[in-house]
Image: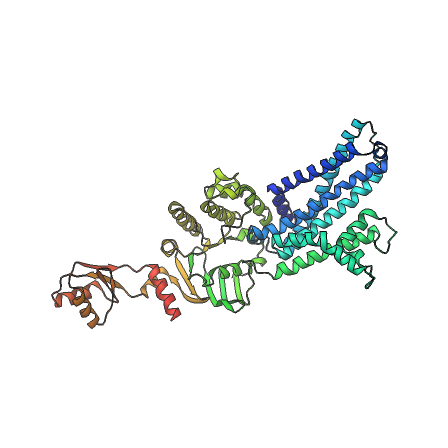
Length: 254
Length: 294
């Protein structure tokens, strides 16, 4: 397991894709933090809660984590490296699990780097406008831990879906169509006048939103508690991983 | 060392491998030959656990590839020259495989030197020529210093110098006691490299033996030319030989030079050329696979 995981991590580190995605992430974060601080209301920015909310920008890394999860898996089929991968690690379940763990580590690393960047930029820019940097450590940790968990899970979902469906463009299009279009539609249909179901709370984006925006106890009709959201999103991760296990184990690699 | 027994693989309506059986012993270089679509690559991929067989057994060292204790260090394989991420450097590609396959990391530089790629080790594989990729694939196969090598068309993309290098290289690997199974469509190349050949066609076993043994089963041929070619041809056909035209000369199957010479002398026909044609592996291959098709 350690050999396979170490190899997967080395794969991630030894192409330029991760570098350019990190650059894109850093650029986006910088753009948002700088514009928020320079153009934001001074009084509002001085409040600890609003400074904490700026850490929420780190959620952008979730998208990058999903993209990386998809790339590390579908890339194996796109470049034909699945053959040497399976020759060096013939156990297909081991390949699926080591890729999922590597994706989780990647997701956590991305968020950690993103949040460090946000904090550094806040610490540098707020005093320029004469605002004290008053971020509450405990509050900040709660936000960052939630984003870390979400990012890790989405990276593993990407890895699982990539191994299950193998076609890079198709899997990307499918994922983004779900995120930006289909889930909203399904959500609307489920909660419509005719169906009146709250099952939409369990969908991936709704679960993510529950982890990010809710607290431990107040499950609502349209939102789970954050524990409920974490359980639901973990369920989607498990489903993607099981799908990858079944499809990759049955597939002929030719 | 390598054993294939009654192997079958079906893709939809196509039976890619149909009851195939053969073995490869240590210290031997065995050519695995067959026309395109004969089932060579499918057989090799089943041996390596990449493709699932419908029935039969394909084992290496008595076990399925995935059941070997350290498969990557026991069996080296070259299957295609496209299993590389173009953005990854050659050395890193090998490091990735060494880690996963639990091969010693120091082997990375050793195998790069062995295949002559040490100077290009830090170049991204996307910038490699086909020949360089083929050498890198060979380096990957040798990372674990395996006792068994399975190579699918390893000469593809190599220049004449590279092909000669590969030939000597495979020979030296077999001399070290390794079993080498090498598929190729460059028959002349295989003939100079292998100890024996396994020939398959349409997924079925056709022949297995040393090149010399198989050549003995093919009729001798003689090339003869005469200013009175038509007259000579008639005499040879009358004597029961199969004759075909080859430019201005005649090709006589199943005859020796002495027999052709005697027939010409009896008829007082002048000969300009009388040459025994050495049987090539190509002749054996076409002879056996065409028999199979008819």
